[in-house]
Length: 286
Image (cartoon, rainbow, N blue to C red; front, side, top):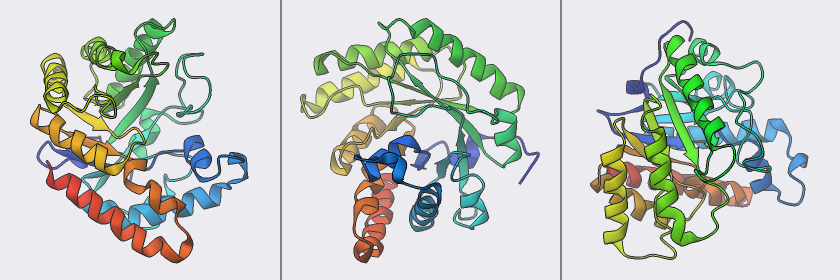
């Protein structure tokens, strides 16, 4: 798998995205063992990622991986079905640590061209972002530079500006919508965004729909919904509304497979079948 130019077609089905996200690193360690994340060895993470992708990827249009524990291991294990491409994460930092303390950095020794040569269909960059915080402009600059680097390497970029430091759940629609507006002109090929409403606080689906319509009106590129670690049922409801409002699909992580990785080994097979069925259900919503 080398030398090919990337394409979003490799992770979509006629412009619809149902992407299985398993690019978690530090956050996965903390999820598996909150009291001692460093006790989780790399081999455990790799084996788990192979197992999850093997169980569910046939229901996906693409899979999101990273170069520390799953590229090339997942590919070499034959876990990716024919026709299912992968997105390669670029960022060094994940969802943990002091978000907003410094701009996002690339993983050392990794690049868009390395992702291309590994066979990726696209790259992904996670940007912790809040429009009112001090590093907002620096993060926008990182986004522009990364778009240019990816396009120079012939790779599309999935840009994920993820809010942090939200003082009030009622402020979430403003923050998410303003973030979408700020990054709409960055040149990314696909925006990965959180749902603009905290659905545990506001249950009015008319509000949900209106906020998603606003995002669709602002963003020229396709946009997809991220799951953000909530429950599967909540995410499925969000996907249904976002899709009706113009979203091109979803990229789903722990809301899909979180219960399976925490289950006892004796229950793992049954839980993995639930993962597969859940992903099939979400894809059906598209």
